[in-house]
Length: 284
Image (cartoon, rainbow, N blue to C red):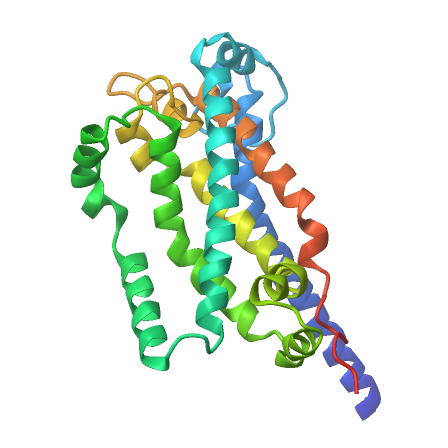
């Protein structure tokens, strides 16, 4: 066998192995979503059988009918949508402002270092450690079972992540762009919202997606701070679990419906994820 044929055969083998591993990883990632969707459309007798029914042959939408028949489900979806959207907007905007200030040299090095360390420390703390005192504070302020309580909670816990994520995007922006804006007479705010933010749209899209997913799926504080008026979808899903039963069909149906807003939000911001807006912005 000639060296050329041996090299080509080796390259084909490597490609086959690479595609095989990629397909296996994709299968492992997609299988939970497949199982969730198929369980939601199985008849009740096939939802918890042993051995499990991997490929359903009988279909039923009784789980979706039962979910929509519940009085609190539409209200929970509206609550989750309002809280998640407002939280995403506030977290992304405030986090971008803080990250931009920390990425530039407007503050002294020691102050920036101390602030970044403090932000990192607050991110490390598990939310459960402050759940009880936070519940007491919210009740003292008479904000229990309100949208505002959850919005303030999610913004405060999401800001450290957003700041650290956006910090890298702002630090990678070419400084020549801002210098050119300064020469043109742009103020600090004009440079931020006319020059920096449009160039950082890919980072803003990624940040917004993570902020939306966090606020949409959060369960701990939603179950502690809400009871009826501001109850979110994860709290409703958790209500299908008790010491006497597990309503697999309703849980799977509501879980499938929960995925759709996240997918739509990610699809709406997808075009910003693949655009290299800073590529070629500075020439010469």
